[in-house]
Length: 431
Image 1: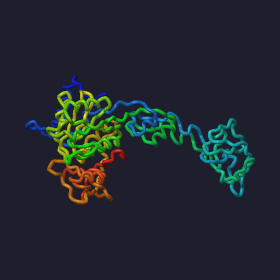
Image 2: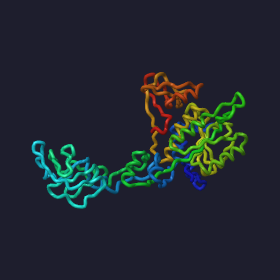
Image 3: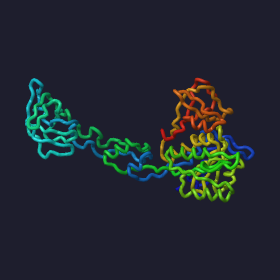
Image 4: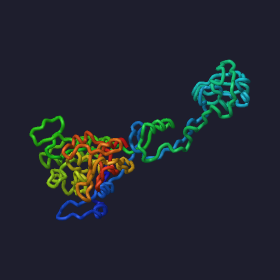
């Protein structure tokens, strides 16, 4: 099911949408990619994205998914008056004036366990021993705690007067009929599952997890577990990071190895994934002359943009075979991580029907942070210690940065040491 609708019949309208998204950006010169700001490119992607269609599942299968309905309770919890704690159900008028100095003795006419129901109303001047949660018998209007009695089983001596309603958990005191239990757009959590079960609901309407396929098109990248055959090769960390981050962001993600030998094999590799992907994310090959650019053609209607960000300014988007959207991220570990955080995660949230929430926070910059160039947004891996943003690694130590960092500092203008800087967490699943 296409989620980024781009049918040929709607080409005129879609061209207008694309033009509107790019119009405010810098026009390309000499055939160069259109220059777009981070916000402008993100907005372009979101205008092409619609939430996935909802479906009904049992409440356990819905855990972590986005709710597509507002749920009201259709009955009271508890749906009967019950004993709040173990005690003796009595009539308040029968124990009026009871005290340690002047106790009241009543005949015990029975015992009621939790869930049991008394058939007859309680007679005056009698008491019934009630377990916690036991339904209040007719005629009982107060429950005397066991601690205020001699715990008798034939007769009970009551040493304290109780008012009407005391010791009784009233009908609907927990959840009342008509109460809002959960609202559309909320993520289903374990507490929500418990509450839904508590009001008798076993199935709800949610959006499915997006199926995401991640493929690497970076040159000289080797899959982990395979040997490096020459000094110019490195193990592929970036696409594996993206696949893991997509899963943490709520997707059903898989990582697929790619044969980079020729266009025909690459085209087939892409086609093989379309049947199981709601979104395809590629890493690498977005640069001019890159293998991914050479593989895509007019039928994919690709858009490549020079986004004002560092590292990794070369981004792209395509519709493969007119049905499956593809987000094309640049190569490089930090570049791919920045691209995922800035663009892929918002798309995944939109697909799941979740609010557009970057989860950004602020921290105090430990040292001067500045964008690489004026008008550019630089993403700096940082570790947040006691509210301070400390740079993790450096441009030459990407794995170290990934190992140490909590997120990315967003630097669009110079940030002096001691000033606040915006930080985007890398751990999408924690928000």
